[in-house]
Length: 108
Length: 118
Image 1 (cartoon, one colour):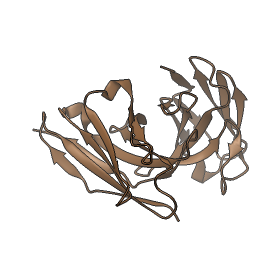
Image 2: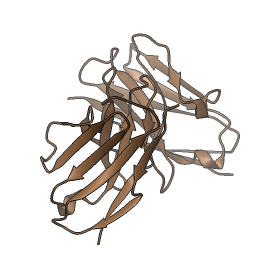
Image 3: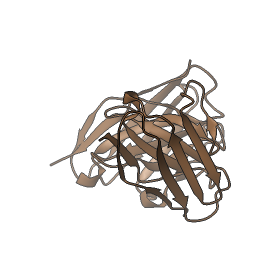
Image 4: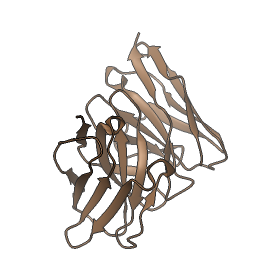
């Protein structure tokens, strides 16, 4: 099975900061990686697919990069609405999927 | 517009089973992947399994093999997830979610809380 490891688990930042979350795969997954945002009590929301493709309606301050085994999600200038949990997910082994353990982005 | 509506919250005894439904509306049903993802309190997302209704053969995460059964009813555009031999660690919110083949999940249900308690 492909394992996904996210870091950090918790990230404290301020409005306006640039933040980066990293996701590593236990083997190459090409660009078959998605990023989700989840707020408390809500279902996850897809932000990015294919490692760097921004979903419709997602603000351009979000960006994704990487391929193979190392990936990043960057928020260029944090807004109050961005404080949430973020998860990466691999779908290289479709129809099997694996999530990373998540990153909790909190206000400093 | 695509909508996934799940059945309501359940309270179950340890050792029993639960069956959660997910009814899809808007858009084609049969050719998309319907996955089940759970989230224990304060924990992360865990993919349990999925099915493409037009093919009918489910796929399960190894962790849940033997305990989970996912089925689809094309006539009602509904997917079901049954989990047996429930234990307290199965207390979680269970989500269904839809995605394209070879794609992530871009539509999600509202979640169903399953509580396992004696």
